[in-house]
Length: 214
Ligand SMILES: [Zn+2]
Image (tube, rainbow, N blue to C red; front, top):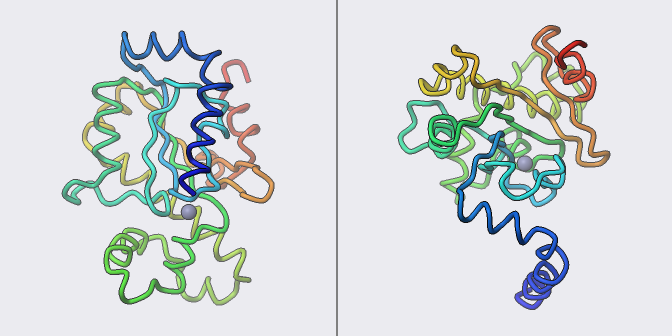
């Protein structure tokens, strides 16, 4: 494994770095001013920069297990720490919370995590409010139940970020917009939450509707 990491680093230095050298130099000298905070899952299959065509300096990223966001009153909760800094110091204009299909964390919320993973079990309690009502869960196939739980956890995360005083003030002044995404790992389709309909719809449609003049 270390050898694979070294090879990857050398590939980066040889192929990916040269066309971006000036950009990296400028960012190092002038500092970052990313327009977007992206909250994603730690899952290795979720690649925020690749997914959004981003370059260095474009995305401020925080990744948590399950892309979960804890309640704002949780001491030291990392997404709130990142959101406060991103909004107040960096001036991000958009915050994306992105869940995904086949999420192991969400599966563990549904099925329970092993007893000895005490930190994981504690972390996953942040998703409890997203769990489907038992009557609803009972009527659904596993895949559909998983998708609903994943999407509900995204909406819960948005709610909690919206309750953060710094984020709330920025939203009220029209400086920040929140977005909920759900990524399908098999197809790389993204569904975005559409507040107008209360449903997740293809990202292209939702952003198209929101575009000026649309
Ligand atoms: Zn995940």
